[in-house]
Length: 90
Image (cartoon, rainbow, N blue to C red; front, side, top):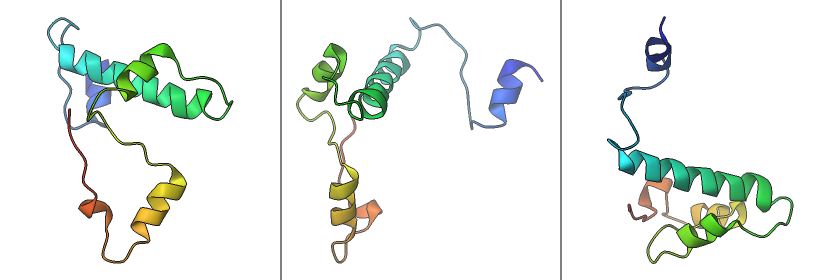
């Protein structure tokens, strides 16, 4: 298997290209990195959020954060399912 062939076993599709050809994917990667860094490193260690995370999370209508407690409370509400939770796409 080449790298793309092996990756294709785990992903539905992959599009090779350069960052300049796919700026949306680059932006999504940066957002995911910063969110992951915040929740997996900064928050558990009680460190301040990184500058980039603060910029992303302060955008109006960017995304909502649900902690385990809030998500559990929402899902325990009668007649609410995960499919019924409203969210927005950037």
